[in-house]
Amino acid sequence: MLRIAVPNKGSLSEAATDMLRESGYRQRSSSHDLVLSDPDNDVEFFYLRPRDIAVYVGSGTLDVGLTGRDLLLDSGAQAQEILPLGFGRSTFRFAAPPGVAGSVADLGGLRVATSYAGLLERHLAGHDVQADIVRLDGAVESSVGLGVADVVADVVQTGSTLKAAGLAVFGDPILESEAVLIRRTDAEDDPAVGVLTRRLQGVLTARRYVMMDYDVRVELVEKACALTPGLESPTVSPLHDKGWVAVRSMVPRATTNQVMDDLYDLGARAILVTDIHACRL
Ligand SMILES: Nc1ncnc2c1ncn2[C@@H]1O[C@H](COP(=O)(O)OP(=O)(O)OP(=O)(O)O)[C@@H](O)[C@H]1O
Ligand SMILES: O=P(O)(O)OC[C@H]1O[C@H](OP(=O)(O)OP(=O)(O)O)[C@H](O)[C@@H]1O
Ligand SMILES: [Mg+2]
Image 1: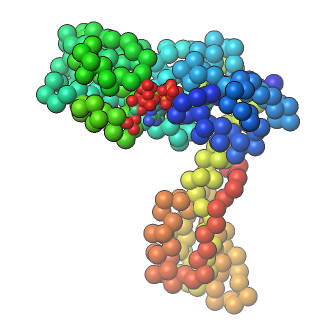
Image 2: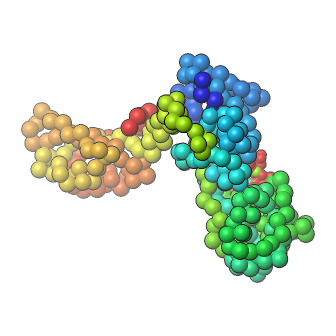
Image 3: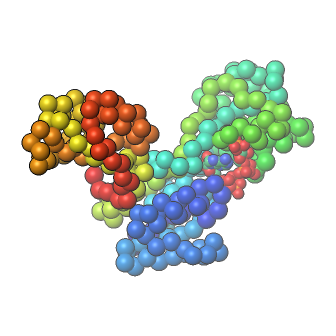
């Protein structure tokens, strides 16, 4: 039975369970449940703090887990990313009151507050900078105003928490993070992990693409297919009127309207877009 770690709280929790549900797995019905068995799919889910997930997976106690890239790297666990999951995006950045520092090189001798000490330690060492790391559990932005730190290194999404604390980001982003599927670094190939990965990839594809159908005159089909190349190649089917064909192709969701406009300008008609509910590529 495949043992899977899932965030039980925090920013990643709901999106992670939604994605697993869309992948055809049972999920817990109460946020108090810590374990859920899904015998039909031969998997068991363990709902754990996202920060702890890399530790369980790195030690081999659990086979795979969903967590944040920043949390994985911060933990230093013997675990690696096998699939980025496209949610829980954030940036890990330095911030301070304006004028305190302009780049990581200015941090020597300053106090830097963070709840990602492992990540910060390695970043500072990589830049040969010696700063005092102030380890906090959360609400890191308050540390400067309260006088325990000069600078913070923290998760930024919209930036509104930083702004409210009178801080501004500086320097290059330390890390771009998102939710990722992880497994132990030296784990042997496991077909059950392959199945889970393909299911999650299917959800990602269904979210990123739409199915587009349209009719176009035969002499324009090459130009139309260049606009909608699909993943492998579009399906082109004959119509009763020999001068026309029907084309079906997957199109990136973000480009849907631009592609429809371009197809229409080319002369395509009856352009229809439908959602993809599930797929295996
Ligand atoms: N706005 C956000 N705030 C915090 N973490 C975020 C945000 N957006 C994405 N994340 C990601 O969520 C993970 C943090 O998980 P965590 O459970 O600590 O969330 P949290 O919202 O900080 O919860 P809590 O503060 O209740 O512990 C990290 O991978 C982080 O990059
Ligand atoms: O850029 P923003 O959209 O404002 O989001 C980023 C903030 O959200 C998180 O805090 P959270 O609510 O998780 O509290 P915590 O710091 O106590 O973990 C994170 O630690 C930042 O403080
Ligand atoms: Mg938090």
